[in-house]
Image (cartoon, rainbow, N blue to C red):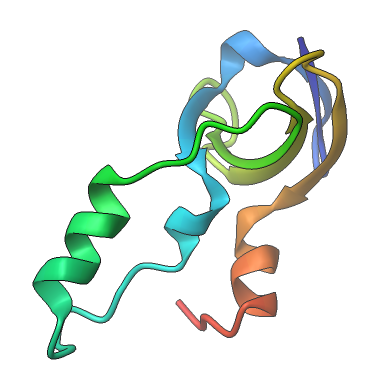
Amino acid sequence: MIIDHPLLGPRDAAEFVYLGDVSLIDRPDWQAEDAMQRFHEYGYLRDNPAGLHRELWYHEQGDRSWLVVTRDTVTHEITSVELARDVARQRGRSK
C-alpha cells in the first residue's frame, strides 16, 4: 500500500505505524467531572467499520509526522491524506 504523504510524496506503508481511529485526536479533558468514564471510552472503545474510515498513521521511518489517512478498509484504497496537525486545528485543538 502506498501512502501519498502531503509533504514527502508517495511512501510505502511499511514506513508508517497505524495508531487507530482519527477520533484519538479528540483527547478528553482530564479535569472533566466524568474524566474516568471519558478516558475509558477514549482508550478502549473502538469501531471496526467496513468501508471508508479516517485513521491516524505515524511516519516512524521518515519525518515522524502524524497523518490522517482516509482509507477504504475493504479495498485498502486511500482517498485522502492530511497532516494530523491540520485536522486537529480544524477541530479546534491548538496543541
